[in-house]
Amino acid sequence: MGAGHAHVLYRESGSPVHRLPPEVKITAMVLFTVAVVATPREAYWAFGGYALLVAAVAALARVGPRWLLGRALIELPFVLFAFALPFLGTGERVEVAGLALSVDGLHGAFNILAKGTLGVLASLLLAATTTTRDLILGLDRLRCPQILTQIATFMLRYLEVLVGEARRMRVARVSRGDDPRFLWQLRGFAAGVGALFLRAFERGERVYLAMVSRGYTGRMPAVWQGAGAATAGQWAVAATVPVIAASIAAAALVLQ
Image (cartoon, rainbow, N blue to C red; front, side, top):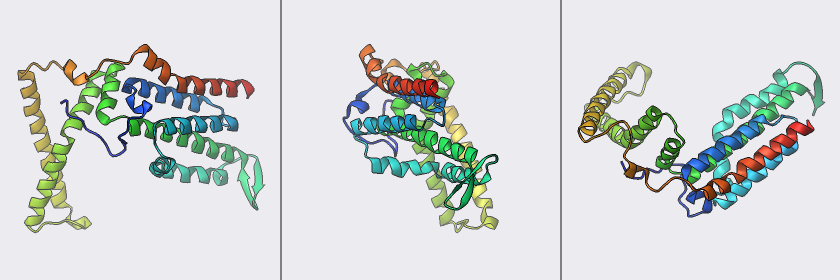
C-alpha cells in the first residue's frame, strides 16, 4: 500500500507549496473557499483580491496560468448557465449593447462566475501540488471518517487492476467478433459490465480476507502514513492564505 499513485492533475515540482503536508493544504483550500462563498456578490474588489491571492500561490507553486486556465474549462457548463441568467432574470432591467438585461441576473451571473472560478482554481492548485495518496493521507490526519478514507485508499490501490481487467475483457470480446458500437448492440457491453462487477466483488472479498489474516483491523498501518503530521510552523505558513481571504471577506461584509 505504500506505492505512490500520482494523477493526471499532479505536477511534479520541489516548490514550497509541494513540500507542505497535505492536511494543511486541504484545510487552507477549504477555508479559502468558505471565505470566497461568504463574500457579498456586490463586492467586486474583493474577488479581485482573491484572484491576486490565487495567482500568488500559483506562482509560488510553479503552476503556470495556461495550465490552470486550460483545466478550469471543466466549469464550462456553469459558465453557460451564468450567461443565460441576465436574459432569464426578472425585476429591474438595464440596457447593455441594445439588450435589456436583468440587474439581478447580472449580479447572479457574476456571483456564479467569480465564486465558481475561484473555487475551481483553488481545487486545481491543491490537485497540482498534492498526489492522490497524500490527499487521502491528509484527510485521514484531519480525522475524516475512516470508512471514507479506507474506501478511497482501496479504490486508488486497485483502480488500475480493474481497468486492466476491463481492458482484457474487451479484447476477449472483440476477438470473438463482438464490438458493440450502436444502441442495439449494447447487450454484450452490459453483460461485460455485470461480469466486471462480479469479478471486482470477488477480488475484493479475497483481498479483504487476506488482509484480515495478516492483522488488518480497519486502519492502515503507521508505516503507510509516512512522515509525521504538520508542525506548528507549517500550519502557520499555510494559514496565510485563509487569513488573508478571511480578512478580505470581513472587510467586504463591513463595507457592504
